[in-house]
Amino acid sequence: MLLKELFKKNGLFKVASFNSLSVIIRLISGFILSKAIAFFLLPQGMALTGNLRSFLLTCQGISSSGVQNGVVKYTAENKNNGKALKQIISTSFFLVLAFTIIVSSFLAFFSGYFSNLVFATDKYIYAFRILALVIPLYTLNTFILSIINGLGKYKSIILINTIGYIVNVVTVVVLLYFYNLNGAIIAIIIMPSVLILITLFWVREVKIIVTNISIYSFSKKYLNGLSSFVIMAIFTALTIPIVHVLVKNYIIENIGLKEAGYWEAMLKISQYYLMFVISLFSLYLLPKLSENNTDLGFKNLVLEFYKTILPFVFVGFVLIYFLRYWIVRITLTQEFLPAQDLFLWQLIGDLFKVLSFVIAYQMQAKRMLLWYLFGELFYASCVYFFSVYFINKFELKGAVIGHAVSYLCYFILMLYVFRKPLLTKKRISVER
Image (tube, rainbow, N blue to C red; front, side):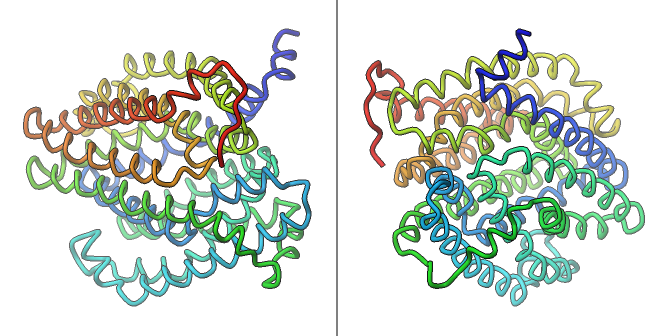
């Protein structure tokens, strides 16, 4: 009875609970993928596939023009306004289309350059040509799911992602088994795009979305509004993944390729245990922040997230630390056991990451462009310089110490930027 009442009263708890099944399936599939890559490719192969994933994130961020958060915001605000919704859908679609054509063209014409950039060899030119062909499917899927998210259909998104995880793990393992590194590369590239097939089959609103796309509904008003999100996303896509590649290359050059594989493995494990809370940011927090127009409302949303989710995060992190040996053994192989030494500082950094992101999402919800760009540049600079500094002092462990110190600094910055609304007791409107 108490649980039933909690579901009714606390929307965040309801979304989190429903999302738990998806997260569990994603965790299981992620563990299987990590185990397979570790077994077949060893730490060196994990480092190379990690570089590819970082590059892929950059391409995906630019090709989708970063409009997903903007679409979520404007759709959430105007879901009951048919004319405005049609303008949002049309404007964002043509914006995404333009950026996708640009990215695909660059990938096709400069595939040799990108192969050398990511793998230090031109052996994998074919991979970037395949990416040029399939990335439009990824951006179309991102576009559709952003609108669905803004409409509050979080169950559809969770179910689509859940099915996608299962299909993804089967595809990657099969291609990895038969084609080794080449199979892993192809699977990593094509799987995000294959999700469109699941979306088209599952989401009933696809037909409504498609029929609302019209060049005559293209709106300069929403183009100007979305432009802030475009700049934010492209800036992030060009800074964070690139900084991670630079840190990884620094580890390779100064410590070794195998050690870079340990660090990459730690990053993958971190992604898996963080996916539950990170997914709630876009599913629940961003739409709610977009709909809210008061400082007090923002403060209450932040406190609600902290009170509801943070205790579970903290307990989970403590368990992860004490079970780190078995986590590495189960998800990877015995060769990755040195990664155990990286858990403490990675977990500390991830705790500050969660604390800061709950606040930082307000910058996207309210289009605080200059603060967002400054924050991303500040964080990226901290990650690189702190990582290099601590790597020189503590070798591989220095990379995760740099991670922890960087997110501590970022959290302090967020507290400073939002000090007034976080301390407010009155109902003051938020400027847009």
